[in-house]
Image (tube, rainbow, N blue to C red; front, side, top):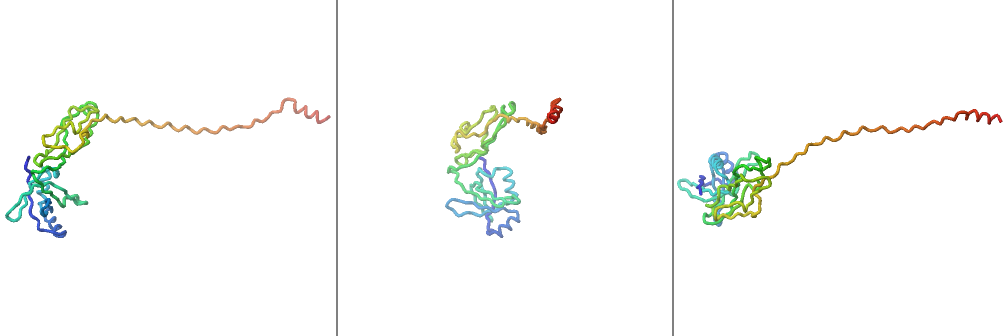
Length: 230
């Protein structure tokens, strides 16, 4: 396991006002929590922490935290428990560490990285669905993998890789269901052409029924006059 070192200093500034001044001086406050022990307040130079995060992951890695106090220093094997951010500036304002034992099994989330190109994507036009971006494992701190590489170079449309398909070194226990899907290739989505709605039929004018005027039969009028003379 690669040794990851982060330097810090014992923090004597306690209280919201002093911590605020500490941040203004370019430091980020933090605390080291230890089971059954008193927590240790620390401070880290902002520039050093940002360089550290640029090179390493914040979570799931064992850190050798070197805490200096005047002329002496003490080493803590820790993992990042939580990083607090300013809700507006989104800057890191506090870091919590958990001290761990290198001889005790712990849980950690390991990132999943894909390798290769899936034929189902490149040749068949499908899409790669990355379901699990992290896999939770349980092992000794020194055995935590930096990443879990998944080879997708044989995946066609409809194929998938599940937890049970991944082979990890001995001593690492995966905490997911064996049938949980890590990555899969799905068929391309068919986009149906929008059919323009039929033009609204022009409203038909209502049929006007005209009453037919009865035309008297020829000779009928003269016949009536003759009957009147009688």
